[in-house]
Length: 118
Image 1 (cartoon, rainbow, N blue to C red):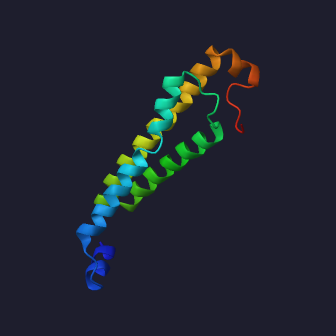
Image 2: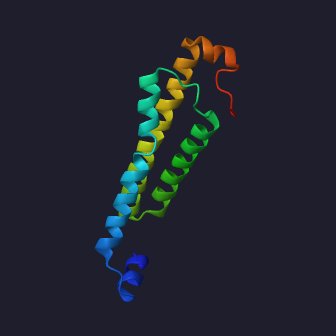
Image 3: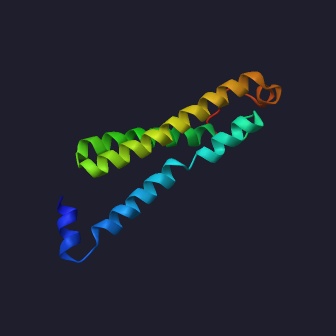
């Protein structure tokens, strides 16, 4: 609420600010979709960095908790929605990593099923 008062006091257009926020939310929500599509299409997860997916998933959970504790409705809605979508994509990619890792000879030859650093 204080941020809105400050924006109005210095002449920011809140509609533009909200549009920027929503655009960022949509783009961030879609960041892992191309990787998810490529992984399913190619039927391999050999190029996925498990450490990245784990870190991304953890950051999503942290931001969801942060937004909830912050309690600002617009931020809460955007943050939870965006981070829930990204978290879902991370979990889907991790599941594909496990699935394709067990069903691909090349993945089995590479070493452990979920190496942190690849």
